[in-house]
Image (cartoon, rainbow, N blue to C red; front, side):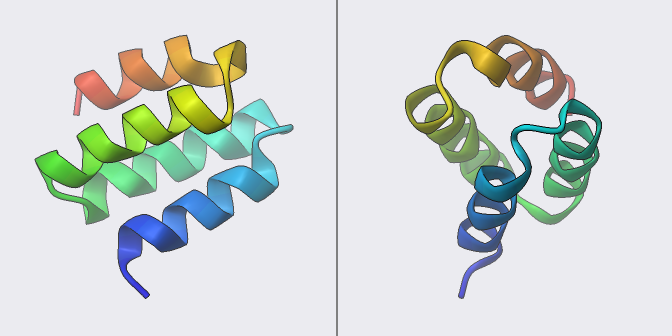
Length: 63
């Protein structure tokens, strides 16, 4: 399993907890390359909707 796929599973399971979600996003920026981070951003927008898309975009773009 690729790290990107792993992070998607984790984020899907913890998206209800904003603190844990942010912590996992931080880990993602350490483990993923720029292309994978962009893919993760698109996945968050599509799969998790508006709940975290703005926070994720702000956090991931600063990585």
